[in-house]
Image (cartoon, rainbow, N blue to C red; front, side, top):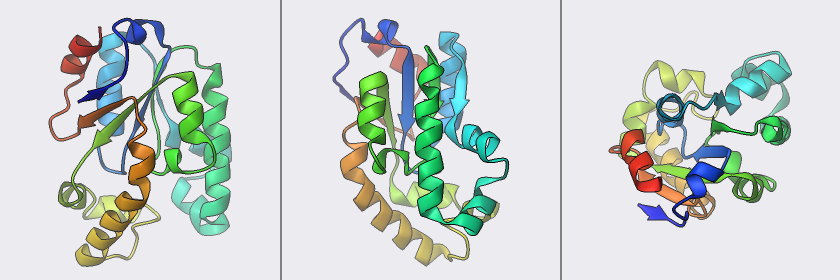
Length: 179
């Protein structure tokens, strides 16, 4: 685990941002971490859905990725109101505009890293159809998309303060190491 956080930083930081590819477990891990730390949990996708008044896949289809990314940035920056919380971001959130820089300047970033084949397994079936960037892809196309997209996002993900193996990450162990 890469950890550039000092011994007391976790106690003193209000916001913890979870980043990683879609399907890496940010929401599940985030809810567990929030429960263990008595902090509120925020899912950026839910914040966006509330803000735009429609589901993300419909918004994506109607307005396109560029408009979605603008809404995503606005919703992320609106979380400045949150003094303390665990925030699960979208898979592409760190890669657009100044989002990664902003998250690092306002909290701790934790990258949940997962191999492409494990992501393929998690993103199969109904899960695939819920996600606009994956719709209509067969397994071979999806694996190619995951590998290509991971390669492009890796420079952003690697800027995280902490990197965890998402297959074995445990919120209790993270807390032991941080506190």
